[in-house]
Image (cartoon, rainbow, N blue to C red; front, side):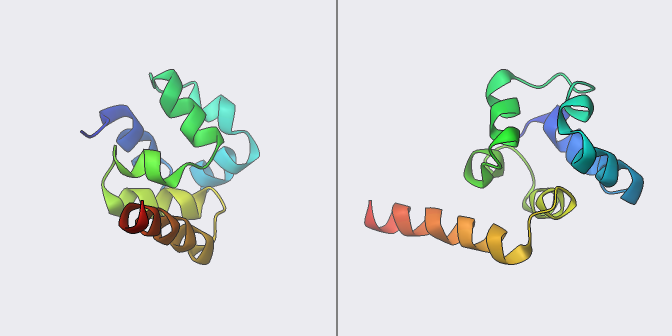
Length: 88
């Protein structure tokens, strides 16, 4: 299931100014969107897996880059979860 407001926030963060504002004060930016508490917690925790179930994969990857996560860390978190699914 996709989350419209989460997707909207991720889309809005595509501008350099918005991404910089988000990195400086995530909570201030998040309050502009009517997000559920579990989504807000996932954003604070950089929970790639939780968020991946709610947005388009392209927006997800862009979001984590805008939030300051390197591609290497992002992909490691995705692969870690894939490994859990295979072995768990």
